[in-house]
Image 1 (tube, rainbow, N blue to C red):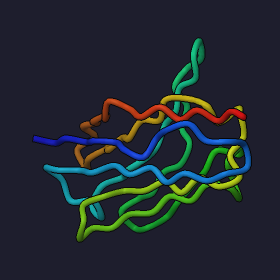
Image 2 (cartoon, one colour):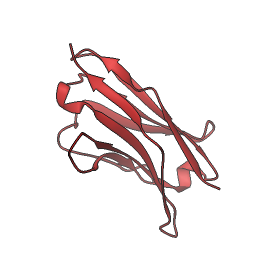
Image 3 (tube, one colour):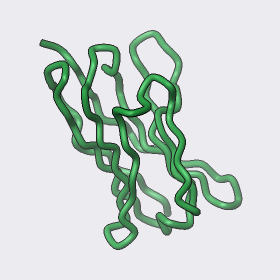
Image 4 (cartoon, one colour):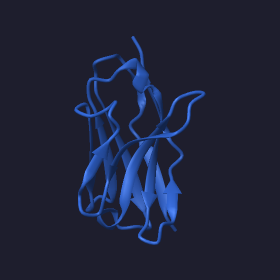
Length: 116
């Protein structure tokens, strides 16, 4: 059974950094398209960054140059390094995994709050 557990969220000042982790079980990270989404209050859930089995990455325009998605297959974990955080990055961040048969799984989310 696939399980995704996010961690690393918290309260941080603008301009600072956070690293989110998504611990995955029941799948092979490097064979799975994995992604980070975020949802701010009253808004839809949007894609932040994704990484394919081949290692290709893509980012939302709003985070390009500030966020970096990566994975460690030995630890079965995906990461999101978030630098130069802005108040508008405040949201619940969700881990997403899409298997080769298109079954999709979500974590429960981790709150990121950027505020002075």
